[in-house]
Image 1 (cartoon, rainbow, N blue to C red):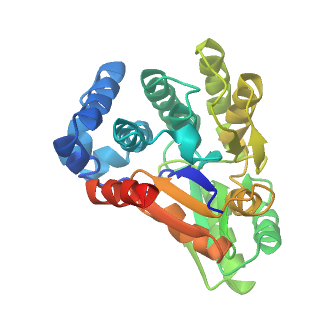
Image 2 (cartoon, helix red, strand yellow):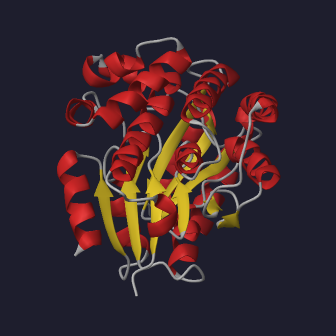
Amino acid sequence: MVKRAFTFPGQGSQAVGMGKELASTYPEARAVFQEVDEALGQRLSAIMFEGSDDELRLTENAQPALMAVSLAVIRVLESKGVRLADHAAYVAGHSLGEYSALCAAGTFSVADTARLLKIRGQAMQKAVPVGHGAMAALLGLDVATAREVAAEAAQGEVCEMANDNAPGQAVISGAVGAIERAVDIAKAKGAKRALLLPVSAPFHCSLMQPAADAMAAALAEVQMQAPVVPLVANVLAAPIQTPADIRQRLVEQVTGVVRWTESVAWLAGAGGVTHLVELGTGKVLTGLAKRIDANLVANAIGTPADIDAFVAELNA
């Protein structure tokens, strides 16, 4: 029996041109982009469709932009009679993708989600002065070894596990000196590759505490409904569904580890999920899914052709 979870991509999946074909093909997609522009008081859609890569990569732009494309796909699917609650048993999102997942599942409005992600992006950027923090990918090491590398490299500075993306793909985050030391230590411990990532801030580590405080304040003010299906939370790798629990875990997520490997393993195991459907820009999560559990069927829906194929599959 087919049992699906819908997943939503995180930062790094953005690309100039994202959402443009959806907007030119579907009025429902155009409406989402317009709603996000109005909520933010900026022409984010112009940056997405034909802006500069540097401008789009800014955290405060990339986060709401990725959400907007994911929600545009959801709204188009709804216009074709495909409701999330009928076809997904769970939702999950990678970091900021949790907000997209929750918006898709009815917890937040599109406008509120856009504003929350703008605040989140700005707060994350402001938490650490540019050039003081860094992140690095450690490829070919298991999680336990990646944690050892981070601990050894810290030397009194922050150096922590940030993302467990797939077996052999860990990301660490912290003070720039500690992260640079960790790259050398990781290579000495047998990492296939250890490289600094082109990010503007050290996400998912304790240096982000000011951003977590900002999100606690913002989330306390926003209207929330229980999602129509449970969210498998990054920090728990387990399902949650009450607004109070969701609020708490979204705050913890700013400084906490994105436990993506465990989240996907939970979906495929206890969750009984057979198919992962990635909604939005890119195919990063689809690639990770196959590395986490080879038995999962994973596909990405981000273009009009993808949408048509998915609707045809459901109606077959």
